Image (tube, rainbow, N blue to C red; front, side):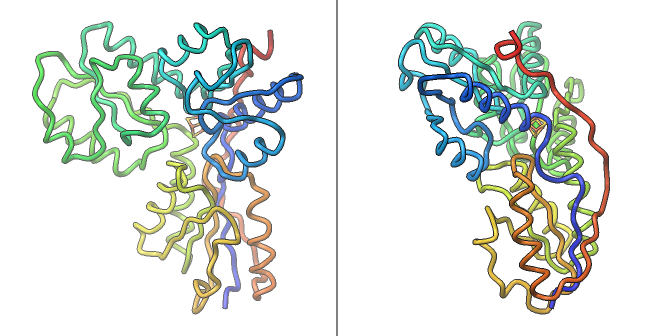
Length: 306
Ligand code: SF4
């Protein structure tokens, strides 16, 4: 039975998620009427359910929000036409987009303005990708894999490459290699963020020592899903769960060392019940495995600071 837990560090909340949660917190606290959020503020079921229980209303379209009401844009960012639609409707816009996502928006917009075709490496349909693509929809194509790169219809403009912030570091390197092979003159920005990079590096280290890895995070959380994939790529069985209720105790059979980590949108409180349960099953050692220290903090948006 399990005797040791390896706790990945860093894990859990990143600076962009902390900021987005604080923004929605403050808007809720300062508002008498309903507060709306466009899309899930961060991709975590517990965080979203908690906000819902406190009165936040999550919408998929700004037309669902009554004129004059506050609307908070999520950490993943939104396309400019969504911002415009919200303003046209007379909504009070509070933008909680992570500054590292905003940077990708600016790169995309500038590249299109400078005459490039943009290749956006990312997952089609993800909130962040839709927002970034919206900066230059006619000039941006989304590619996910090296195969997608081969299938691109040739154009005449030079190529500029940006990426979603929460991709697999290794898979993205392969896709960028394929882009460089096909477009040797492409200008490439790899926008995978520090939090994604650090969490993947940490899960790799624990997965190499563990008999089983558990990643806490929701299924729509890109960085959580990637963490499970990175762990599994080492050959160690790895599962992603929203919380302890999704863990099958049969996973622990024949397992001595359990690796634990959490995606960037996951509150650390979700780990404690799992650690307590493992202690009850015989774990006597909880070992933090520190791969990187994070000190980044983002300023709150002007709509909050005034
Ligand atoms: Fe920002 Fe990275 Fe966190 Fe996304 S995962 S909110 S890009 S710091």
